Image 1 (spheres, rainbow, N blue to C red):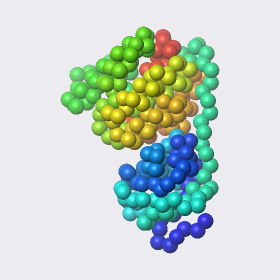
Image 2 (image 1 turned 180 degrees about the horizontal axis):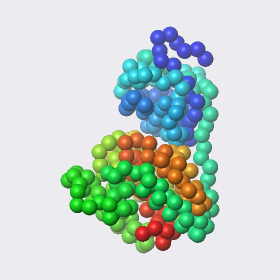
Image 3 (image 1 turned 180 degrees about the vertical axis):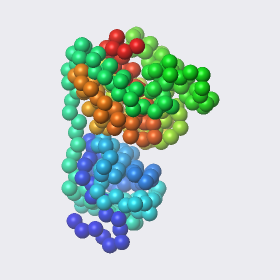
Length: 299
């Protein structure tokens, strides 16, 4: 399919399941956030798609594209409408060819054997120690002896609220009581700055790992859907995908390797490249669940 003249032509080569549903639906797309390496658009039903440079990771909301320009801001702006055409979307300065896209679907997680999962969790801890930066919430939470007395006040408040939210989650995990679950959501949802706040990424990791470990998570996911109004639409979309057991490819790979007792060092390294801190924050939620389902693996 040829590209109309004077437009940037992006060829979508891979679609996650959420992105495929949005692009396969009805109506046009509208750009709602634009960055150098990505831009987000929503469909007529409010579903979100994250268009990314083709070298980025696959994921449920992701549409990986070839032909990425040097400056995406020159090709699309917030508010631009991408009109639906057969096998394509047409904007003021952009042509999106979706006719050749394949669908990415993550494999199901393996059935965990506790002894193997404990070994995998120890491997994951070592990988975090090797790759996570010193200021990451995950590192501060997992290795408290490294924290010392230093730290900026905003970071300390974020860490304190994160710790309180995880305390409430652990209480819920042991009792499955509604007040503890809602306290965890109250503390975590919307916590922190950014397109996807740290607290939201942690919650996404929690519910993703509950699903992946075969824990009963329907009540948690349903309440999450009701409580997620406290954050922005894009973050809600990522949490909704996680509640269905869907996340970016390195999270699926890392969880599967951990449950199988294998080293996930390379997957943890890749997780660190997701967003500014989103990868590490989501992994924090995943590791919290693994430590509860398989106690004794690490501290």
